[in-house]
Image 1 (tube, helix red, strand yellow):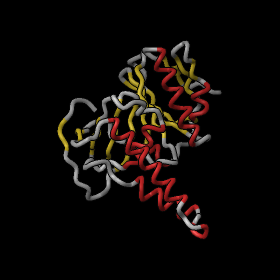
Image 2 (image 1 turned 90 degrees about the vertical axis):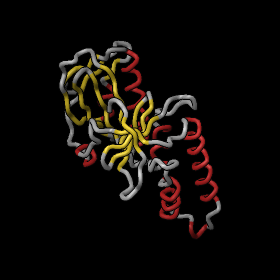
Image 3 (image 1 turned 120 degrees about the horizontal axis):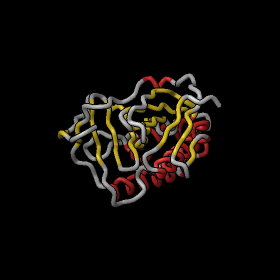
Image 4 (image 1 turned 30 degrees about the horizontal axis):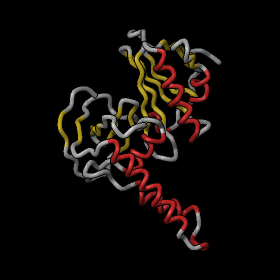
Length: 224
């Protein structure tokens, strides 16, 4: 495996967190690629689990604040290069990036969206949506039990928005599936920047493009 650059994390636990994130991505796509961007002592890892149609973002602090990196690599090869106990990772050779890797959310200009339900309500909404999908799927007559019909039901359910935020429920589902929403008592923020919406928790972020024409109520927040 060709080495592009070593990554040394400010805390060994961040290497373990990155490894966990990569494992979850690979669960949905065994050939997943991730785009890495590093600068100013921070690393951002972008992935796109195909089941959810969102961008997932995991960040980590690096020891070297002079390191600058922007490359798309195999998620599986990156996972192989993570040394959790040593708090470091080897970056594998670059791969030809998928189309999504060329269109990332902006780094700045984010504003806080109002009317965001607490984490417990978001988790409950996902559980209710999963139960609804299963019930509607089981109720389908045999002649309509097709992949197309199931996909239609799924799109209808997961495209519903959270309160008045404009954020589709599939973004919350993705956040929970990827380990970004592990408990009911954690802080959750929804941010907006241009056509993008972003669900952020202490464990990571999920970004989607907002629905054209959707109304958002936003307030300034510090940082991006």
